[in-house]
Amino acid sequence: MKVRPSALIWRQNANQAEVLLMRYNYGGQDVYALPGGNPDRGEILTETVVREIQEELGVSVDVGEMILAGEMLLSQRNDDVLHIVFATRNLQGQPALNPAETTAHELVWQPVNVLDKLNMYPNIGAKIQPWFSSATYLGYVGRIEQQYFG
Image (tube, rainbow, N blue to C red; front, side, top):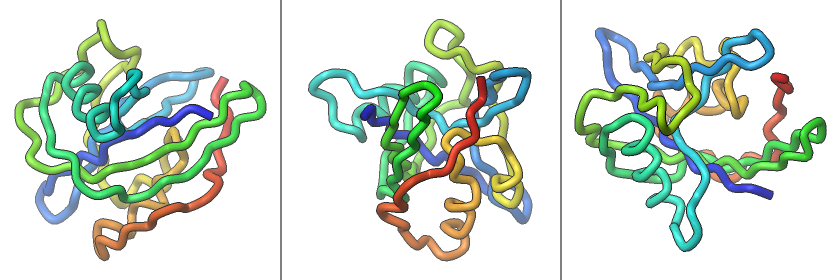
């Protein structure tokens, strides 16, 4: 099983919070992911998040609490992944895609209230929405049901 830590980066815009997502296109469908990636050997997960954000987006963040962890089992690809989402703070810089480090098509800020309607990888939009009003850390959420985009 692989491990993929990711960052929940958000900003307050007018009366709503917005989350920074990376937009990909798989099988003709837009798929949105939180920024993150795979740990290098000897790297702890929070270091991975900081490095990936710097490499892919050219910005720095402080990594905070773990919001959730859950497995996504994609038997179609034999690709089991443990996803771990960390809250971040203190975004420094203006995020911009680095095409040398990611295949994402663009960065988008999406309102929190639409996260459950997007094709997300992993499929956690509905799970993270309540965090913005309650700041309840979900911990281990078990299996994340995921549509296969191929």
